[in-house]
Length: 285
Image (cartoon, rainbow, N blue to C red):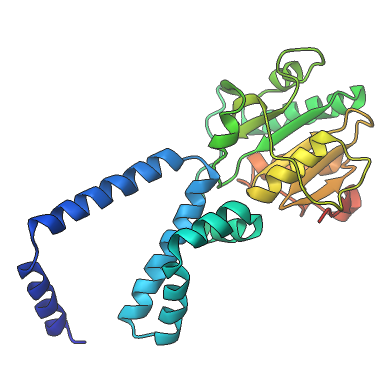
């Protein structure tokens, strides 16, 4: 189709544009806006972005006369409500695929914020010493580092903190027999957003029996989002890391420092890449 034909088609369509079409567009715009606002900072927001990209791909395939691709995408989207309700809400694997699709077009945001008078390197040192101290004392802890997928729905289950991350704050929160020591803390950049948050437990049957609730919660939240969850075992003092539904256990001081540096100094490139020599990888599927 030439450019002139496109202009003629648009002109013909505008000539038939009525008040009911305008009302239709306004209502749809308001509904989409409200949907985005309601799901902002939640995992559902990434899913919606993924579905939106599928729609854009379908329109592009139709415009470029890619018939097979257009047929495939149209077949998926035509199932509409059934696809969303059954597969997105009840199948975690498909939800994760759509979340990743939604994140694929999103530039990596700035993770490191101003940390007051404490530099980021000082923050890493502070957290490193604190977590090792918790491990030595066998004080259970669960620290979740939010990445690109918002954890607003999980944050809402806890107590709002909105304070700068620091070793003393982390240690005080997880001190036994204090009001906030149960549950997880959620960190966004250098801000500790909330404490005593409830996480979804892993439903996998292959998880090692010796792992407690904290480890299952870390595996659960890392399965449904791209977050990084650090666990200190109350029974053994061992430090573990959960990412993408997998668990790295028995992290030593070097592995812990590498992880913290990857989160705060290398802008979220942390995870399972700090080396096998300093931690024993144990994948739970």
